[in-house]
Amino acid sequence: MLILLGYLVVLGTVFGGYLMTGGSLGALYQPAELVIIAGAGIGSFIVGNNGKAIKGTLKALPLLFRRSKYTQSNVYGSAGSALSVDGEIAADGDVFAGTRY
Image (cartoon, rainbow, N blue to C red; front, side, top):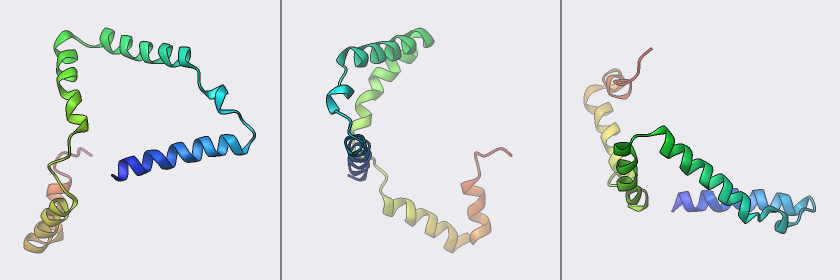
């Protein structure tokens, strides 16, 4: 829900600011330009990846629209238990486990 709110804020401020400066929204609607940009992006993706990666990406696309199995309370609960059981120094090992300096 916050992602949707974020998108609405971004779009509202961008288009609202454009209108405040006297711009016409009709000038922003360019279907041919959208087709060119989308086609260039999709074509570049196809050229830059092998068949296995493309199939994997297409298979994973529906996952973008599913709810996450992790909730904010789960994440905070895990972090809180790591801090309370082992102390702050032990939690650093979990946080920075995959980080290289």
